[in-house]
Image 1 (cartoon, rainbow, N blue to C red):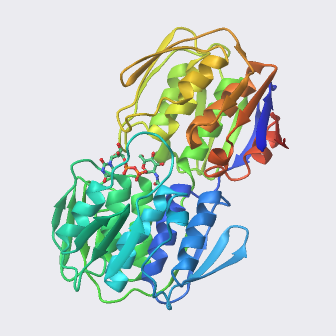
Image 2: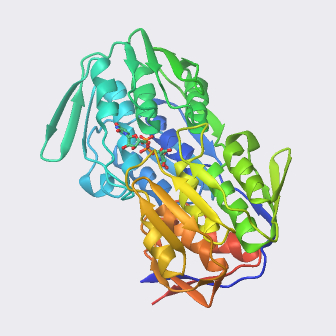
Length: 418
Ligand code: UD1
């Protein structure tokens, strides 16, 4: 079994380059099933989730080739399979994103219900509602979901919640439908804009991505393109919190600061200095961190994917902080682990009340999901002794070279096989 060990570290200092966004890479890889010419994706992060998505594409008949560590070439001209295996689907929820592209490209698709992080019930009703509106018939049977349609026809779709995955899946299904599709109350995340830009390069006609109304004019055929994936705003935010929690000074490079406005604002509230300069952001920690409150919301609100890392920070802020999680039902699994390290946290429904403590103490802990794992690494940096993190496959799903990047900033972090 592999574990990550973190020892109490000096203030982190130096530069770190942020990788391409996991949450853009996955839908873009799925969308690559739509084009019939060569597609080259640049700045693809080297992550377990990306590997799984590449395996899904290969299993469907696509040719996937690594041209470099972070450059992938995909050719989907021979894609003819419409079923994904349970084994691959159960490894990662985002594999469900192949459903929209397969439905529109082949007229049918069959997948098992998706897996992924255990952060609450994660239904797919909104994805299916969208497919149905476009004219697909949906069958659910023995844990499999099939969708098929002789022809998809554009329609007006209102999402009850601005789900990121549903917006992406419906966008991808609608690009080659007959006529116009309008998605209202669409998710506005930067990853949706990246997907729209990519699809438009392939020949799609999508307008409005990044707003709550997306308009898609169906086209007959999509070709190839070269596209650079946007920087990972959550990885960037994680290193910014690392600067704050460790009392350090980090220049985070390859960031779009507009994408992380709430993270910047909240770090400033703690008293840290945050300097935005072109595509980099420097965070200089303050000696005494003020308590802060956060409430997770769909973009442009505070990202749920940064809640756990901020909670790690709040455990040592002076005073009482509150974190309210509104996006997922069950995203406080890091709380018990942080408590094992000496944090003072109480849960009341969807709120966590965090009373800042003077010191944390290293302990054996378990990463319950990807961002919870990152929170434990951050807490480990300022905990007396050693923090031994188990279940690190969750961390590897979303952080490209986490120990290398942290080590270069001066963190005492190691990976060990037991
Ligand atoms: C994506 C991100 C994930 C992030 C999340 C919210 C990827 C690969 N993952 O996940 O890192 O935490 O956005 O920013 O991009 N919901 C429904 N019905 C549906 C779909 C979703 O009720 O059909 C609910 C979910 O249960 C959840 C909320 O909507 O409570 C948000 O989910 P969604 O935006 O769909 O997240 P994902 O796309 O799964």
